[in-house]
Image (cartoon, rainbow, N blue to C red; front, side, top):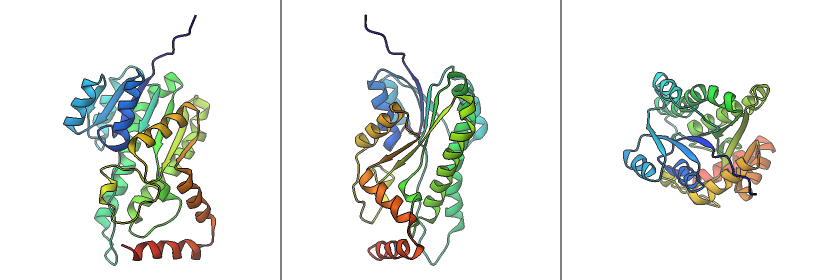
Length: 246
């Protein structure tokens, strides 16, 4: 007799665009119960038609996030993928733009974690946060985005330690360049560009395997990690060369 796999209850933030949207569709295709959180009405309607339980929610509003997530009965897996990117062009340092990126990327994540964590503790589930390979090496113009992602890396790796006694697993996703609406603004070469489908597959495989860190594609993330361990002069020269090509 074949054992029946338990249907997972999966919450995805940033589910109406890019990687989050693809993940929601792929998990629905697998037959999972998906809570899709986002603000794009058209994308939410599409996900509803595919069987998702959709939540139109501003993740920057902490009280609304807590209230909305409190209504959800069970969550086995929470993938926090909401975020934004804005580049800074020197010599003008736009502190408003910098703080907006930091606030959105950290705020949406922290509010989601606070709201969903009681459910994950109850289910002994898994929390997944979306970092970026840009956090491995400082790059010009990415002062805001890279700083926010470096903060997310620290947060998720710390939570791996602090939530272990509560039987909550934590994964950090470290993608390279992925073809999404957010990366369409990039006016520089994006080596080893991945499709949303490739990104979703890598993330789902990493989660299924229980990986603490899910990096892809390795041919980009590994060199960046190595570069980040070299003397400052090396990565500064690389970043300067990339910046001159823009």
